[in-house]
Amino acid sequence: MSRRFSRYRLLDLTLKGGLLFLLGMVIYKQVFEDDHWHDLLGQLQSNPEPKKWIFLILTVLLIPVNWGLETKKWLSLLPHDFGLSFWNSLRAVLMGIAISLITPNRIGEYGGRILLVRGRRRWDAVLATLVGSLAQMLILLCGGFIGLIIYGRKYLDLEIWQFRSALFLTLILVLTGFYAFFNIARFEGFVMRLARRWKWAKHLLRIRNYSQKRLLTGLQWAGFRYLIYVLQYLLVLYFFGVKPPIIEGFAAIATIYLIQTSIPLPPLIAIFARGELALLIWSVYSEDSASILAASLSLFILNLTIPALLGAAILVQINVLKSLGYESSE
Image 1 (cartoon, one colour):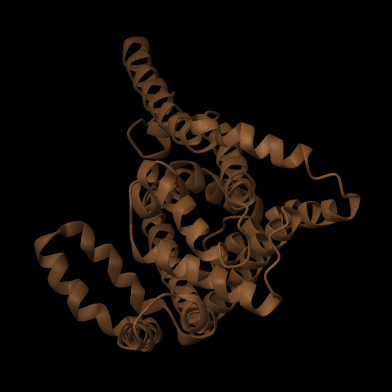
Image 2 (image 1 turned 180 degrees about the horizontal axis):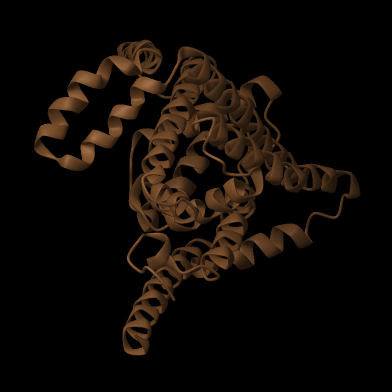
């Protein structure tokens, strides 16, 4: 028994060590490589105006609001008898952030959230995460559509046919997405066909339990969260001296999030793409590239790095293999 325990313990430590190493590498590449960190410190030291610090303070205060809303969204999409408290749900969300940073398009979020869920209820957690992601994507597409109209028409260097094509495609995605989202139970037949080939797919039949009321509630939480992280971006821009008009600022941020989400990239590539996109969008309001990159990096640190580190701290305290059902006892 002790040898079996030692083997599982070694595997658990190895798995956690590998995840922490990858997370550390992503954070290092984003924050400390290419003098990004020194540039950020330089910008902070050269920002002596006391009144500007209120923007950064508000951004920091909105971090728990942001992830608290994400937790509420997830809870609203879980079965009513799921029995997971808000605190444990928040812990699961934070672990999901930690693992999502090392996977393309944040697919690791699913794995992180099920670590505090037992047995077959993991599929409820996975499905709630999936539906919640779809809700967030719908809100993002809606915001991006509006952003393209306001910002894209004025500043993007596109031919008229390219601009109209982008708008039309986004509108089609929005309308199709809303129809599919509020008629998600109609995909039951498709899931049943999948279940004939892959047994695990039968668990996805739980989509039939989603009422339109629950879906609307999840969509509302997604909308509130979208407003918060768009506001955070605008506040941190103002702190670093990039001051677009408020409406245009919201529109530009919505456009950035639309483009970022439309192109799934591995984390290490997305790091550089995020900075280049920020320079492209905000260059019409400021020629200070250091301030633009500092704002983008600050938002990454505040909204993702800090929560991911908290998630990693929670992760090391649990037995990952046991949480996944591979160890029956200690």
